[in-house]
Image 1 (cartoon, rainbow, N blue to C red):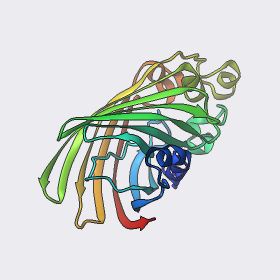
Image 2 (cartoon, rainbow, N blue to C red):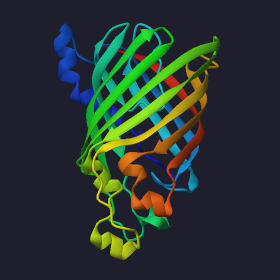
Image 3 (tube, one colour):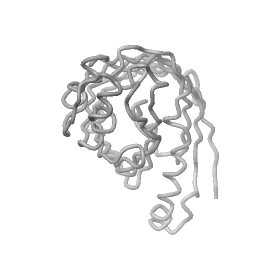
Length: 269
């Protein structure tokens, strides 16, 4: 199954930030050393959020950005972003996420529920490096088209280099969302209850999930990067209490997979 969640959305972020970047130093925003990273990830993940059944999926990994003063830690949970303010200790900028559609073709458990259209989430991010082995990152995004809610992701990752080519990383995760988000993905109105057989459910806002993720990343060369990753998520609050999850799904969500990417370096004047 093909997943588009990371496909090319990064390019739109650079276009949106072009004015800010060029205004800061009087040069064109594209001047300097850049990279283009292209790859793919294959993984076993729930058929949809809250499902008790996993399926094999794959996702393209495409990102583009300016070369920084040194390598930065990044996680597969990071959504495409562009830093507008950057130092050794912190970064602040804009972030976006592609949100795929959801309907009964994603699982028979969804029959009778309304289709969720594809869309995007756009907002800002901030991350801090309190030490040289720890990073904390927060993203806050507003839904567009797919839903009209607000979503916030928070993650802390510790990382250590076992060898110069092999890095182990991981840490806790948490997601919060507004009631508009939960109504779209976890709410069940009277019409949907009659069509699906699920109990009616009208959620509020709150903590959507808590969990942890980890990865083992191997860089056999300066340009190649491969990794294996594992993520566990526990749906809580309005998500965990949804009749879709309680009656047909599972609060425990597990994802495991592998990825590989290649980085092209180039200069633009």
